[in-house]
Picture 1 (tube, helix red, strand yellow):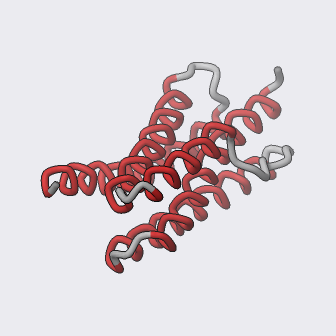
Picture 2 (tube, helix red, strand yellow; picture 1 turned 30 degrees about the vertical axis):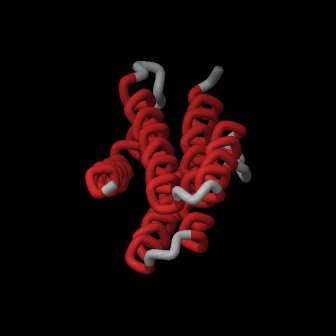
Length: 151
């Protein structure tokens, strides 16, 4: 696999996972009754959209075609979040699922950086976006712990 193909493949994997998160946050923002939580979800959905845009630009710059959809795992996670919310555990259910989505994205970013085969162009973009990914992960981890302690 040449460097251009590897860059495209690597970044498209991250695009798909970030897009899953964006879609899930957008949906959760509409479903939760708590206005502050909804606003937080909207803000993080915006961060995910920015990550998708940045990674897509890097794929185009590398001569590739950006991914246009999310992943199957992300679709299942959204479904599971809907089921939990339907069962009445709305706030905690969504926060728990969204925090898992953050875990997935952070793990994918870290794996990309630790992979010695990651092309320089992909590595630079991932390193640039990593602080945003870490910040969203931290916010949702803290929110999950706070909600769990309150229940």
